[in-house]
Each structure stands twice: as structure tokens, then as C-alpha cells.
Amino acid sequence: MRQDASRQAPLLTVTSHGLTDAGRCRQCNEDCLLLDDGLGLYVVADGMGGHQGGDVAARLTVRVMHTHLMRARAAGVTGAVGERQHLPGAADLSPVARDVRAAIQAANLAVKTAAQENPDLEGMGSTVAAAYLHKQVLVAANVGDSPIYLLRGGVLRLLSVPHTVAAEQGARVKTLPAPLQEQLSHMLTRAVGTREAVEADFFETIPRSGDVLLLCTDGLTGKVADAELQAVLEAHPPREACDTLVRLALERGGEDNITCLVLQLQAA
Image (cartoon, rainbow, N blue to C red; front, side, top):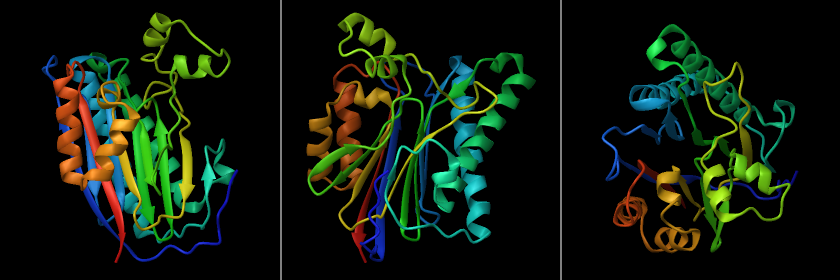
């Protein structure tokens, strides 16, 4: 665990924008996004489970997380300052991150229950990529393969942990054959709503002026390389960055739903 408690976060303003597109090959958009600048909550969810189930799972995940964290904010939660990466258990998380964890668990229960009550929704689930800004803490949390990037000081950093068979096998095996890598990269090992409980991975840091965050689905990252992501984020404010990134993914095939959410932090 790395911590940086020597820096104090300045008063920051947030400029954010999100964009989602069904893509060129799918009639239904199973992605869902949320921007709440007042609460400081930003969520991207990529549903799975068929035409109806994926859409329901993604929307339910986003809605339940939003409601849970609004209630937590009303209760007056205060976070600890520091930087922590990919913590395995709730005991090491700040109070703010524990609220995000609880929100994901609440969403998991809601999706699981809805699937049990409606046979048409059986097997549905969703990824989640969330960023939550509260006082002097920026919490990033993810389940599944929807990535979260932080652009800071000219370096683009992946904050999320991909929960796929390819990523987990790749940690054990140095190289995988390309066809197998492609197949396994779309097989999730965790998703919201598919089991009784789900564990997210977390990253916590002190937000800084100049930080840019990108939350997206694999419909974008499957078409746009990290170097291109960074170039666009450096060259454009959030609205234009989203427009440019979605356009690039569409121009390169757009076989999947495409969603991106960009937020930029500046000293007030």
C-alpha cells in the first residue's frame, strides 16, 4: 500500500461530460452512465445478460449506487487523506471508500434479487467503474472490465483492475496465444449481480488540480489505444474529448456499445 499524506488537496472545480452510443452493430445499448457533479459521483456500467437483462442490470446498478451514496453523504461521512491502491478488504479502506463498497454491494443485491424474481432476467449482471470525490479523497472502484484511467502529470495510469480470465491467467502465464488472449479477454470473473456477494478493487488518492479521469467501457478501449486516449485527453476538454473518442471507436467498427465519461479537475 502506498500513501501520500503530505499533500493537501486544494479547492477544486470539476468539469465533466459523458457520452454513450449503441454502436453500429447493436440495436440495444446495455451501457449506462451517471454524472452527479454536486455529489461528486461518476459511474459507468456495462450490462450483460441479453437484450433486456443487460440494460436492466446496468441501469439498476447505477441507480442503486447513486441512491446509496446520496444517503451516505447526508449522514456526514468524512474520508481519510492518503493514497491506497487495490486494497483487498474493507478494513483498510477509508470511510469514503467503505461507502462506495457498500453502494456496490447494495447494487449487487438489487440486481441479483431482480434476476431471481423475473425469469426473463436470469443471469443478468453488470460491470461497474466508479469515481467518487468527497472532501480530500478521490476513490476509484471497479468490478469487471470497464476501465478507469487517471491522467496526471503527463502520465496516463490505469487505476482499475480488469476482472477477466485473460488478465488473471496472464498474471500467472507470461504469454498467451493471441486467439486465446482475445477470447479470454471478454470472459469476466466478477460482475455485479451474478453472485451473492461481489468484491470491487479500489484506488484512493488525493485529487490534484490538473487531474483528468476517464471512465469507459470496453467498446471504447477495444478500438482506441492508451496512447491515443492520452493524446485526446490532453488536447481536449471533457465534452470534446468524449465526442472525439466515441467517433474514433465508431469509425473503427463500433461493434459494441461505446461509453466514455471524462472529468477534469482544476483549482478553484
